[in-house]
Length: 89
Image (tube, rainbow, N blue to C red; front, top):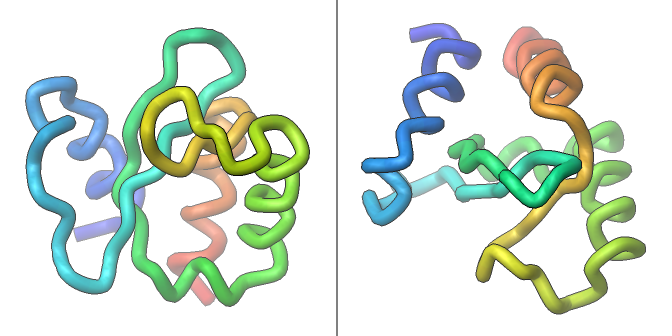
């Protein structure tokens, strides 16, 4: 299954309470009040581009994440584009 398909499947609001598979983590992405949930491999945490998103998150939210989880302040389109690139590497 392509990463983009996996990400899109994780967007369903019914799955918000679903367990995250081992080796993955859930993140909330968006620039508005409405954030969407994505499930990504933990291996992305090592990538410099993903680490930059995490730095932006730390600058904006510190350790207080309004969604109760890791929140990344970028557009969904940018996030999907980035994760598509990461899945190819």
